[in-house]
Image 1: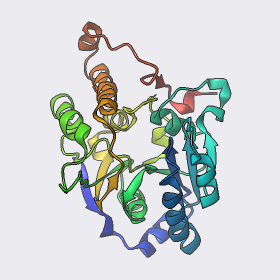
Image 2: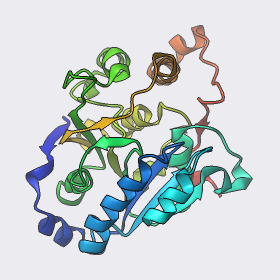
Image 3: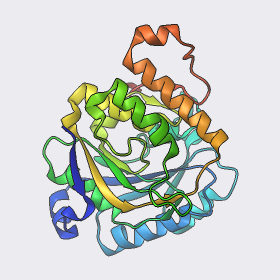
Image 4: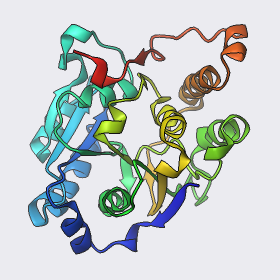
Length: 282
């Protein structure tokens, strides 16, 4: 059973006490997010590094940006790495999952919090909210955020790929995960030891793959979700969302039934390669 929490179930002082010597990294994968990444880094740094020491490091992984994402993030106080420059001996692939996988080679945290770089309506309580179950709930290894996602004037109409693709797929193929509100949420946290043991799609399927593989390896009871309130971000075009949906469906079908996958054309595209578990990489 997937346990559900609310972000204010824990006082910040209690989390600071619970973390003790546990190292915590915030990782922000970013591609062409110069307009928003500076605000994300600045607000988190001021409240959760400078004011209270809940985070040990804020790391931005720049995934082939063609704008000023790297310089803006560095000026705001993040440690910035270009994904292509991390372990160049391993090659490079485009995609969000690639940036997240590469982060394992340049971060130190026992716990890793992931946060998207394109947030517009959010607050820094996202970070302690995601850390709460990992620090206080025995047996929890991965925590997903969920939230109200507005689209235009409608408060709950955001997350089109989530509602039209991911949740129906999960309900049909992985019913033990059916209680997850937003399986594609970009705000989530995980134990390094777990994430380093997982195969990681280099594209948009990274979040759902982590859930499916965690449930298979450690049971759905190792996953928790936290209500983070409200979140808004830049919406992508339908054409871009179509490519995202295809990657997610291909990954889910590959994991659900090898016989089904063999009958379908699920050949990985350049954005749909899977990286091996990082702990297996020399």
